[in-house]
Structures are given as C-alpha cells and as structure tokens.
Length: 97
Image (cartoon, rainbow, N blue to C red):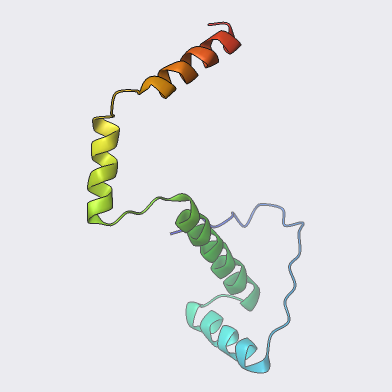
C-alpha cells in the first residue's frame, strides 16, 4: 500500500476538481465508510492511484516465455560480435580508457 504523508507535514499545495453530483455523492459515501473526510479520502485515493500508475509504468512485467528468455539472456549473455567490440573500443578511446 502507498505511504501516506504524515499529518504533521505542512500542506502548502492545493488541488481542485469539478465533479458531477453523482461522483460527489459516491466519494462522500466512500469517505464516510472509511471514517475520513472527503478531502482525506480524495488525497489518499489519488496518492495510491498515482503510486500504482508509476509502478505499472516503471516495473517490467513479462509473461512466462518472455521471462525465461529475458532471464536466460541476463544470466548467459551472448558473446559480443565484431560490431560490439569495435563500438567498445571506440568508446574506450573516447573516454580515455
């Protein structure tokens, strides 16, 4: 679960959103069921959704066959070909290595 910012942190930024009456009633009901204010419910929910979206974007997920190929390539990389060796030498020269 996402970490929630401490209540002691100074909250200086503001977010605003326009919602339909039905959306507002839904959010108010959910906040009441959780025992929080609408503001706290919206902030925590948005933070969890943002954390999840970032994780989904940054984490590489592979299906079984692709995962096997990926892991095998990492554990047993192919030998560099001529083009890779030439590029490595060019890089080393350019870096003064």
